[in-house]
Image (cartoon, rainbow, N blue to C red):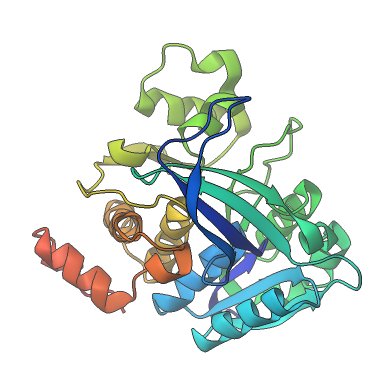
Amino acid sequence: MRTSDIVVVGSHVYGSYIDCDRLPRPGETVSGSNYRACVLDDGGKGSNQALCSARLGASTTLVGMIGSDEPGQAAMGMLASEGCDVSHVARHPVLPTGVSVALIEPSGMSVIVTDPGANTGVTAEFVEANRDVIARHRFCLTQFEIPLAAALKAARIASEEGVRAMVTPGPMQPLGRDDLDGIDILIPNETETMELLGSEADGLKPAELVRALAGRWGLHNVVMTQGSRGVVCFWEGQVVGVPAFEVEARNTIGAGDGFAAALASALCRKMEIEDALIFASAVSAIAVMHPGAPWSSYPGPEAAHAFLASRGLARLAHFN
């Protein structure tokens, strides 16, 4: 029985941030400022998605692993305060909570290096032990920031249990021919799409890319995000595209995670795909306008409603 909306099987990391006038080139050192050693309102791809979907009102569970340290414990407390069920997040006996170091330039663009830490303990066996948890939900979101075998196992369990499996294939990893079997919705960015297609991507337009990706990997639904150029997807045999909202980007970290969470949340409410894409794009746009870390940038329903109404989309300002 489906008693909850979204289960996220994924990573948690906290952030260390440095602002810089521009991002360094390979081998170059640049001066930075405003170093934040331990930003708790931040997460890995998994906990970002869990926080965003919970804040939007979807009943959400996170399955993952942290260390037994203060940053990990504090983050779980913050997630719980948003209504996310963190009772299935285990503590690694040895490894610390994962951490990312991010360099951010004034435009909001960033480069990030991550040490996964305790996230490496999320194995396929660990995911199997949480099969019953996955089966209680309508959607299962996962990403490649946990071990690949675990992410693919989560998607396969979801498919076997009648749960819609949604995968963000980042950070990109080499995949075998059948690795994406059972995935209902793949959400790559443009770079990941190119990597998944290889030379087959040469010369293709966005609509052709998503069709080719679906055909190449046997996928029903592909949603390709393109940043400021919007989203195009191949959805149940049809190509659907929506433009991005024009906003001033101040921090793009976590925007893609927010998009995926918002899309799943909208689909849980049975929005049609075009409306769901618009809603998810609005959530992502709100997030990038905020200068802070992802958890402080994701909107609740009221802020999403107000943004959509301000853009003449009051018909979508009824998400609850």
